[in-house]
Length: 122
Image (cartoon, rainbow, N blue to C red; front, top):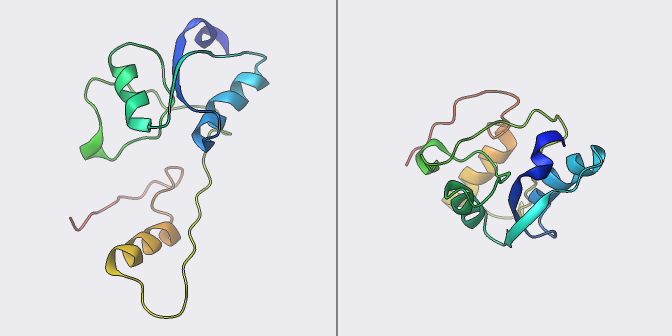
């Protein structure tokens, strides 16, 4: 964990999968983050980090959603990833937005380990 152990952390609550991305590398390094605030909202965690309330581990935002006040440093730990999944009924067509999301998940464009441009129709 190194120098990060002395830094205050702002985090999502323990029951969130994103929290595992912080807790597991800390445990592996025999460290314990100093958590000064927990939230249920990623945007709240990011906003508090932007005000220098603490360090936060959050997903990379879409370019139009990035807070310019936040300094982003990519995680180097290969274990820091999230698994996502989606299910839908095969009977009948999906609504248009659901179909676009399903295509996005299946395409793998969300996987930053395989750089591919994301083009939005919006």
